[in-house]
Length: 76
Image 1: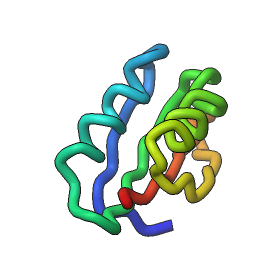
Image 2 (image 1 turned 90 degrees about the vertical axis):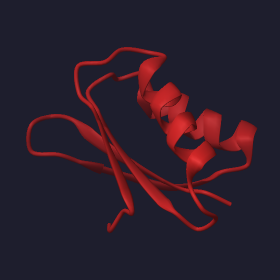
Image 3 (image 1 turned 45 degrees about the vertical axis):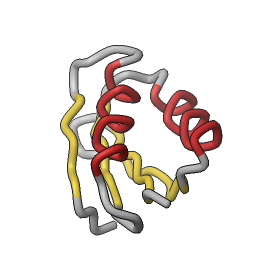
Image 4 (image 1 turned 45 degrees about the horizontal axis):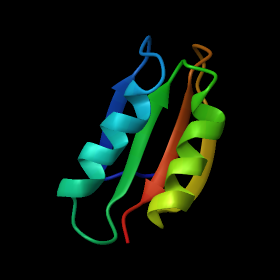
């Protein structure tokens, strides 16, 4: 999936992946797609939960070849 902003959060533990997405979303224009690449297994629940709480659209996730997962969100 194409993203306007790509964040590399490999090696960072909770809550840093969500904090990074929140910061990027705060400064992004409406419709911006943010991809965050994570190795923290907690991101699988943390990022969708944050999206629901903040009314940001969770677009899904894709596995990476190195074991990380990329999560995609769209800023309202």
